Length: 400
Image 1: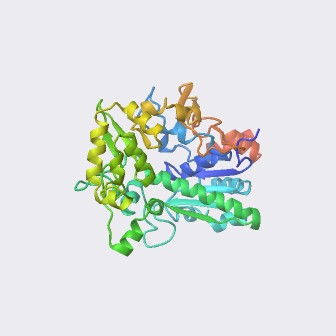
Image 2: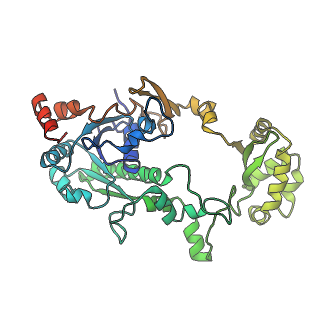
Image 3: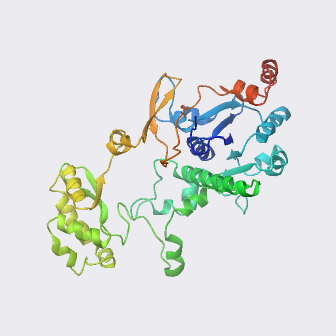
């Protein structure tokens, strides 16, 4: 059965926590056969991450390690490196997120991998990239978000820049790493050659910052935090409703703003010199926000959203995860997906596969593995041909 557009592609994932393994998850979602390597006796810390707990189990792992086979392997041993290189011979992509130089220290750098498989693609995710004066530093998402300038734009004017309630930098780096892997796989179909994909957390955070760099370069503008809105983009904000909750209304495009004015029963605002075009509304942002807030405060959120949606104005609620998991749109598209968790013998909900492909959609075949090394016999026995006695010996030696 075809499991997605990457069916037949084998990925070796070596590394821990979020960024590199997130790239592996994205490739696995699209059908790749992902083999997740953990050192024997030192499982990925993500197995114990997540705020919910049932019988001592946490559930970040259930989602993050979905569609992956779990093997143990000690790359610090000669026998472990030999097995790893055998896997490389039979694989298409290696994903790692160690500090630069770690693979080379183990004599497993790209040059060594390429000797065994000239088509191998090495995806390397690190804090600052494989080159440059900071390449040697370890990197976490929180620091990458700060160093790239992304965190400086978060929060409210005059206040400290808070961190996001998730590791955005890791996810961004994982997405760019997966994108790079796909581009390298395509090029390999033409040349037969592999290459290195070098994704940095800092650069991934930098890449999504819209016009901040040219605005500074040309106009000396240092974009700072703007609270619930974007400066100069109006109206696009959150507004309080009659029941004390909030809705998002985004009508900064001229045509959409005219629809908003009509829907509010105030069509004259569209020709008011203060609000007649995008630039004018940006200069009079406080005034238009006050008008919309007064209108919204007299209405229930559902009424606001229904009225504006019917008028072609972009609006929506600010959902908690409790509302997200029952959202009809997300549910209808399979974006609230079940993952069978062997540890608690029940399905655990998580995000579905993004994006949706019409002819070869990705799939969720299973949740994260029950234990480290769960698939040792399958991978080393069936794929590499090791006997049960050989595998037992490798376990005794601390290789597996």
